[in-house]
Amino acid sequence: MNFSELLNSFRQGKGTAKSHMKNLIEMAAVDGHFADVEFSLLKSIAKRNSISESQLAEIRKNPDHVTFEVPADNKEKFNQLYDLVHMMAADASVHDEERKLSNLFAIRFGYPKEKVEELVSLIHANIKNQQSPDETRKRVDMLIQ
Image (cartoon, rainbow, N blue to C red; front, side, top):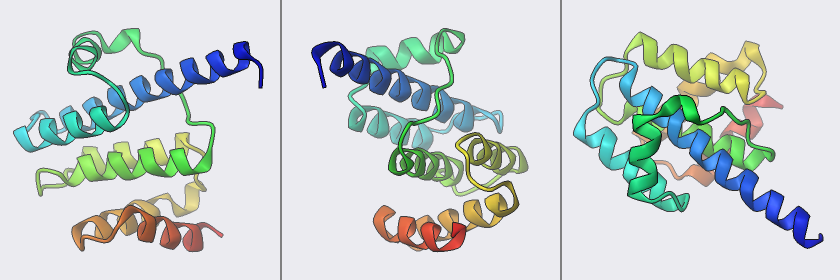
């Protein structure tokens, strides 16, 4: 991989991370209430994705400046969907709009449309039962095969 390809890969990763933050903000706000627990989760996920609090504030303030990007690899698609479902459930109250949005993201990430509801429910149940993301991914892989 030459320097230009490496630089493009880094930029895409950062762009995908910003897109992910925008998606999480949308998930947190779709029910009309951005709870403190959702904001704490958002900051934690931003830190894990090397997004500073000032960048996060900018994304929240100007979400239209961030383009939606589908992650290139399947592991990252799963990780982002897992985070979105986690955000959906963070305030212990899952609204219909949050579930619909989770399903929509799963479809946009390329998961089979006919399995999306079951997939989101599986991830949600595993989060609720404190299963690890790795264990959840194994179950998701079995479901979609």
